[in-house]
Length: 107
Image 1 (cartoon, rainbow, N blue to C red):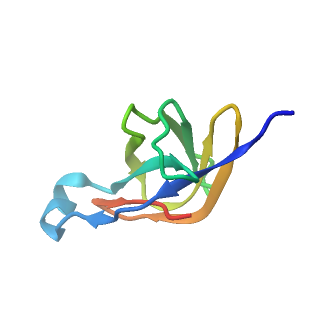
Image 2: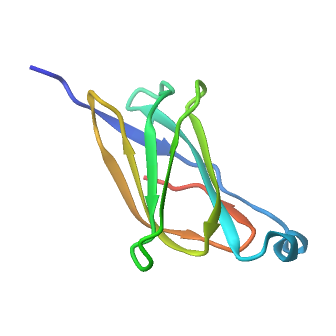
């Protein structure tokens, strides 16, 4: 029997200053760190973001330190899904991406 462990997405939010908003246009970013229930980082995890209103979707893979970043995302509300074989997938709904800001989803 395969034991499925949960994936957790931990947060550290940061926003860019308003001065950067002009240079960034109408996009923002999502970033975070993927860990297991014990807090150990997970690399190679697929992170998929999807804007339900527009259907826009993009994916990334977590790095060796568990970190990921999805930049150039159009402003809006996103569903963030993290998946890796052997783990139960996690989904976080209604993660807001704002102009020239970096958002970190929280579970």
